Amino acid sequence: MLIDTATIQIRAGNGGNGCMAFRREKFVPHGGPSGGDGGRGGDVIVVASEGRSTLLDFHYRKHYRAEHGQHGSGSTKKGRDAEDIVLKVPVGTLIKDHDTGEILADLDGPGKRVVAAKGGRGGRGNARFATAIEQAPTRHEPGVPGQERMIDLELKLIADVGIVGLPNAGKSTLLSKLSAARPRIGDYPFTTLSPVLGLVRYGSEGSFVAADLPGLIEGAHEGKGLGLRFLRHVERTRVLVILLDASGADLDTDYATLLHELTSYGEGLAEKRRIVVLNKTDLAPGGLQASQFGGEEVLAISALKGEGLEALKHAIGRMLESLGAP
Image (cartoon, rainbow, N blue to C red; front, side):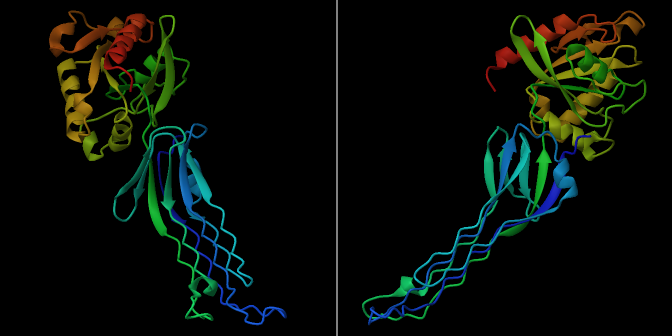
């Protein structure tokens, strides 16, 4: 199961207190201040890791706390800095402040990281405040508290191609025929409940990553069905495959519904390059007209029988190559 959202509470460590101390050695007649500085509190760092594919860990554990810095001590001994804690999330995770909605980071590449909560600075010991005038200062500082906040983790899958369509259009069957992915396939709506990725190879060296995404219904951009969860993952795709059921009653209406939902959601989805694919042509009533979608590139296939899939792979590959490097 793909868990693609989570809200967690994080707390960085407090800085250690600075120490107030004076030297008392037998052969140091004038003594002097010797309080050391406190150590730095640990940060909470979030890192994008290729080894993670879901936010499941954060679904069960909600609180993360870094250690506090050690207090300073006499003989100008500095307190130990605390270890940072590192939270690993999937590549493509968006980090937001839960209270303000501010985007803290978009970890859209392996190894990208953000300090989500900053550890507190250690306080200065009284040795730091000695001057020629004030040779026995008693002033010292407490450690600075670490940041504490609630953050939202929001995973947006990174795929080259997103397969979009109404429920039961054959998206899962298409992905299973194009790649080695094995999404759940059924003859009823909403078989796909979470996105599935598959690597598609074409030609001698070409390849791209395609995503089978939950079916759209009218009103998806308002959150109906699985709409918002689905549309979030479309944002990062470069090309959309608009999959239509050629055995259906009204292709024009189906196409208009999908385009309306993409446009209404915004985030540039309607401007993405797309290919219209008419699936289940083996069940079409006849007289199928591929020209009805204007300037869109239209291909006819039967995913179940494997007809037209090579042409589709190469058409997608050409479109991706025309867009250049991501």
